[in-house]
Image 1 (cartoon, one colour):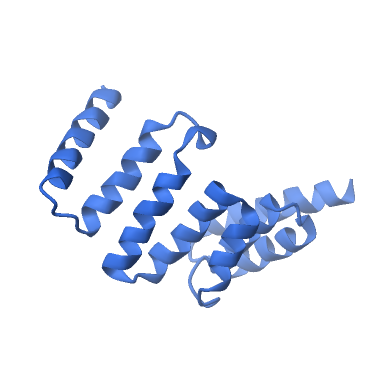
Image 2 (cartoon, rainbow, N blue to C red; image 1 turned 60 degrees about the horizontal axis):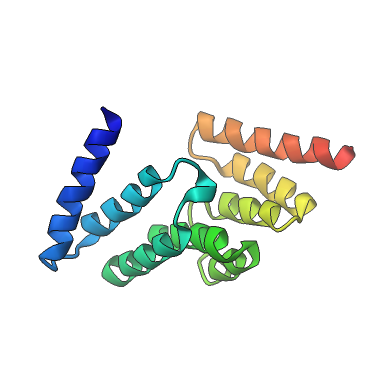
Length: 146
């Protein structure tokens, strides 16, 4: 049933895009469709997702879309490219530090990633997020201890 609904949603999205009425929600739907279409993160079309985030940023200028774009750039072009995209943003953005931690981990800088995960946990907006970030920091610290 889920695949049928995803296919139906993609058809509706394609019809809206064919009418050349790209707005924020259509771009968000396109990103969601690309995620839904991939069975794993590795199979996700990250290059196309970056392109859709570029559209979202052009349409809205939203700092949240810019932050999400940095993650997508990190997936499409490597962690250092993602970190470069992140460096252009305000470090005061919510979840900025968590994104930095993730990208540093992907780049192999585990000490920095562990420190940033712990810092992000202290600033987390809710308990599940804080717990997740603390687990990431603990996992990396255990790995560093060996």
